Every structure is written in C-alpha cells, then in structure tokens.
Length: 394
Image 1 (tube, one colour):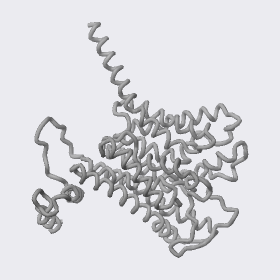
Image 2 (tube, helix red, strand yellow; image 1 turned 180 degrees about the vertical axis):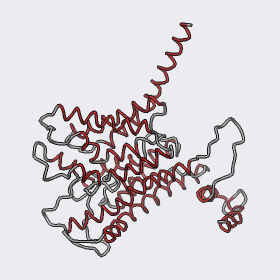
Image 3 (cartoon, helix red, strand yellow; image 1 turned 180 degrees about the horizontal axis):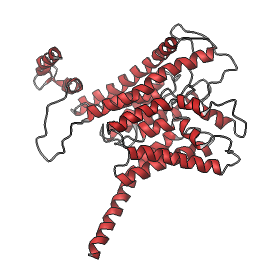
Image 4 (tube, one colour; image 1 turned 45 degrees about the vertical axis):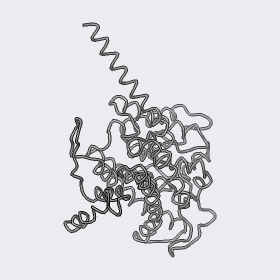
C-alpha cells in the first residue's frame, strides 16, 4: 500500500491546475478517495464528526449484498440445469451463474460510473461513491435473460434522469436501481415477463442445452396471477422452498436466508433503519392477512397466506435494501414507521388486486419515495403544533 500511495503522490501534480491532465482532476480524486481515506477537513461552519463516511457506508451495503449475489450465481445455474433436465455439480452450477452475472455487473458499473465520471468532469465536482451500491443492485433485480443493451439503456436513463438531473448522490428523490427496473418493465414489457425471463436457458459458455416444451420458468407470483381460482399446490413451490430460494425470480430476490443475512449486517453496523425494515414487513403481513381473511373472486383465500406473501417475489429484498435507502426514504422516526408500513401495504395491495402486475414491491417503494418528504413534513408540523399548544398553556 505504501508503494501505491507513493505512486499516487507522484502523479498527483499532473491532475491539478496547471498540470497536463488537469481536466481529469475529478477522476484522479475519485480513484484516490476510493483507495485511501481522504484527510481533508472542513474549513468553515459547524459539523458533526463521525468515523463513518459515504465510502464506508456504501462498502458496508455492498458487503451486505454479497450473500444475495453469491446465492444468485448458484441459483441461476441451478435453474438452468433444472430446465435442461441435466445433472450438475455445485461448482458447475455456480460457475454457470457467475459467467451469466458477470457481463450484467460489468455493463451496470461501466455505464453508471461512466456517466458519473463525465458529469463530474463537466460540472467540476468530486466523484461520489453512491453508484457502488446501485451498480450491484441493478444486476440483482433485473431478470437474468434481459439483453445487455437494454440494461445499459435503462441504467443510463436512471442515472441521468433519476440522479444527475437532481444534483447527484444524496439529492435524488427516487431509488435509482428501482427506476432502472421500472424503465425496463414499462419500455420492454415482453422481455421482463413470461416463463423464460427469469431462467437462463440459452446455450452459453459451452453448457448448451434446450429447455423442453413443457418447462415453465415462471415465478411463483406469475403462476398465481395467471392461474386465478385454480389449485396451485402442484405449480408453485412451498414457503420453505421460497425461504431457501431455489425458485425462479430476479437473481437477488429469491432467497430469504441470504436477504436476512444482509439485513443482519445492515442492522448491526447501523447503516439501515430497523424502523423502516420492521414496519415494511408489518405492513405486508397485515395486508396479506386482510386479503387472506376477505377473499374475492379474483383472489381466493387459497392463493397465498400472509407469510408466503412476504417470502415470494421481491418483497423481502425491497424491505431490506430498497426501502431503507436513507436518501429517498423518510427521515423522522415516526415518519419511518409510517413510510415503511405503507410500503408493505401497497406492495401486497398491488400484487393481490392487479392481475396485470403480480409483483408490487417495486412500485410501492417508488410511490412512497414520492411521499416521503410529505410524511416528514406532516410529522414535523404535528410536533411544532403540539409544542406551540404546550407553550400557550403555560
């Protein structure tokens, strides 16, 4: 590390004003602060000092996402060989998933970071570490068969119109990764739905094979939406299978075990709000119990019980990694309870009563992103009015 530090110090003058590479100063500073903790201090104003910073926060979230990423690689291979009707070892399945995920991760980071680097150069700003998390979230929530060019277009759209246009990291009002998925869903719906969207069955990396005509790669929620009123015991996996995660779905959203490990990391390190996380699950279970207790013709009670509702689909992933985003969520303590609870309610409400859209977690989080400032405003105003009444009474 000392030799790397010396090398960076040696080339540093070239990137400062007057140097031959001064136009790339923000690029150099971005790489330097990524490799080493900056020793710069504030020159004016009062500040709260803490050992944590944006870089540490982002890296902690990335570490929390690793269990989901590693399990996703295995599950992609598992679903592939299951579709082929072929036997494979653990490492064959994992290696297949690794090679399937790697191009998506590279495209996500290349496009997103590329745009942020260009934006920093144009506006002469520092390059922030915010996309470290977004860059890994996108491959985990996008169906594995999504063409790479679509992922690139959606990522570019999300970074420009959901982040940079608002001022960059910390200024966006919508979750950038979810905007990427929303763009794909509404712009290319045929590629985001269907039996084969969530299982990579195309011949690739020398594994080859063709899925039989009877094979279905639909997600459990997709089966529920397309088989209303039918007996689904033979078509959807059990809640235990969903908890483990060996089911079709977006790569990072299938395993509750991996998601809960990530949740534990975020809560122990204090990066995520337990109020938001717990209230999302509370809202989902409450709405799931309500839908189960009052069945309708379009959603019989035999479909999914409340526990299955939070285990299937992207609900748990959204509760742990999307709803807890401190930038786009509520800031006040009471507001966080309200914000999280409504996300859980709307997620189940959308998936239960909207047959055309069986997964509601994404839209629920984006909807509440828009209302988070209003929730905080109302909470603050209630506190102000209460204190004013107390002052007048005295």
